[in-house]
Image: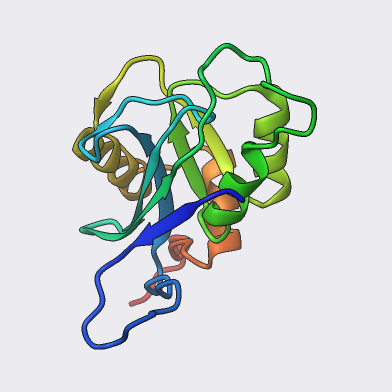
Length: 165
């Protein structure tokens, strides 16, 4: 049996449900080994830091941890040794996933779960990833992100060109 641990802030409940997404927020998962940096491939990530990102702020929602991960060789140990599906299931509800690398089958599973994978070429701090995400939200987001924002209910109002005087 695969072990998945969810670590989140709770105030008074013993077993809190997955936190609700804040209105207008984009839920972002970041593949990490140390909870400080985006520094992992999707398959080998021991943890995913999950944040709700808005134009002016972000909040840590939870950390999802896995005991069994791949070794980045691109090969499964045994037939039927599926370490990807539990990760996709655990990340459902996220809109974006940032990682250093991801294989085609894993990316396809994420896209089927309505999670948009984004490969980042170099390790960087989680703060840098969140700041860049906010910048995309504040400026003119690329078309793929506008689609994600619309699905998330986080799309901003389109500017009106009518004279309001």
